[in-house]
Amino acid sequence: MIAYAIKAALASKMVDRVIVSTDSPQIAEAAVDNGAEVPFIRPGDLAKDDTPMAPVVLHALGRMEEAGYEPDIVVLLQPTSPLTKSQDIDDAIGLFLVRGGDSVISVVESDQPPQMHFSIDDGGFLKNFASEEFIPKRRQELRQTFIPNGAIYITSRTAFLKEKTFYTQNTVPFKMPKSRSVDINDEFHMQIAEFFLSR
Image (tube, rainbow, N blue to C red; front, side, top):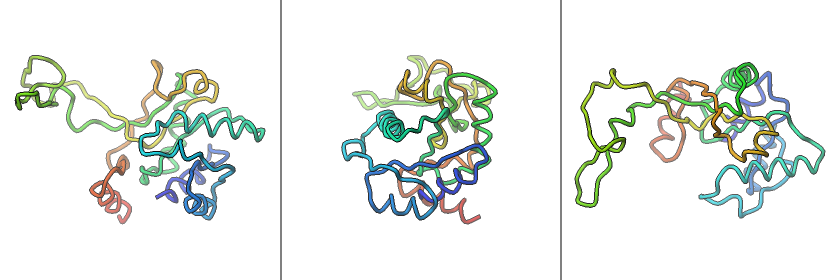
């Protein structure tokens, strides 16, 4: 999957360097074979299943600074979003440069607004997740909502070192279609991605 992210980044007109952070020699080799740079190996304590993204990015920025490289803009692409195109990357960077704000995060329209989400209480009954009182409405009457699709995260190096997150009060959404918003977390999502990649 990492090859798709690397190829999209390399084809971008606005990305200068493609750097992969990994703790795996196999992934590092695959990254280099596909044209990316792997100038350092990520420590194992930053490569666990529950490792947040922020310390990984901070580690990469620190290692690159040690090597004399301080990028103006940081673009994070996750290999779990293999349908991202180079044009998406360029458009998102362009939005960041023109729109302003601290960051840009790619999003996709949510299939169901939060007003239609339920949780199950301790007694086993459905409770509306968004509010205590559930008022049935047609989906079309509810406000359009979006969720991050996991594909593209953009910020300035300065802003990330200060905020230590891509999510701030001034985050601009970059809307992507559902057909390119598959975030692979399980076998089902893998099958969906394979379907779109085969078309």
